[in-house]
Image 1: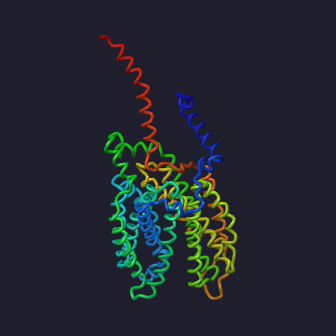
Image 2: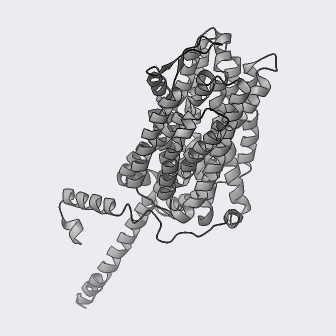
Image 3: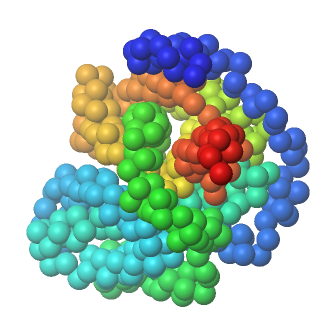
Length: 491
């Protein structure tokens, strides 16, 4: 037994904490980085089945984002139909964010216990029912009830998509696949914008047509997933549980919770910062463009589309770089450059605002592109879907008030009303600049102090592997003593 283990528990904890803090700077760059400057070899390393797993996960995550943004894009039209205010309709968005954590718990445990396939299919089937239901609601209470159930369904999809895409992914492609997967969020927003403009003002059913259309693609996604098997990592996990009774799911889950609780807390705190970063830079930005700067609908739509193209490019770029330069270092660089871009993003008033929006979202979603693989590498196989999903959704819940915080802060910086409008104007650019500066700083500190398990074997539970090694070591130590005892027995 070494000196560390023989010391009192508190002293051991302090020593481990001190060692962790002392190694944060030296470990920013991985000891054995993967040198893949060209992303093409990394993408070619995926076989056909791995590509199919990635594509079905991307489809699921993209349509989750589409479903979420359909309400925010049609809130004013829904309000007129149901005879409520826009603020009342946005409560539907709040309910979704509040109940996502419930879905992450339910579907995360089901996915870890019974497999990635059928919980994913169940999620998509619920999407179909609730999208259709939203299109048929006649009262405000019906609308809130449907959106509340939607929150539960949406909460279950992220963790499942992350592990489906990444658990079997080759080591050299994890970063770029992570970045591509995460940008399903931005892609879903773009699709929602496109189909909202195409359907809500051109059909007799208005906003309802958008939701009815939203129920169709999940049918294809379900068929796609039904044609695929379970991924190899989960199959290996199930085979281990059958051959080793002491590694049953419940025992693994209890032991993983005991060993990984501090990782879980860290990931929730980190994801709160990340969700503040995305919501803080996105939710109120269209309001700034239209109300503060007086942008028309077309110009505002183009600006937001350019910003989301920057998000997609940034997520893929930084995700790929994280394989060579480390997950934490890439996030830190994105935060520093993003902080430097706050001023032009928030205060440029000419056509350069599109470039500023592009590059700010390039950095925000660049940092986000690292997150799916970073969380997956920190999580144990026994509860990977649950932990990745619950960390993301609890962080989302913590940041759900970001737009409200910015709106309240904006009231402290009033502006003169435009001559063409009587709507109250506030300096949202200044508010978002202050807010995003704080958020970038927070994420930088948390990420710098955090752990990193780059290149971890996603099919092996580090806790149980350590226990197995210790068990084998104990047997090897006990073998000589048992042999001597056997020899000492009288004839």
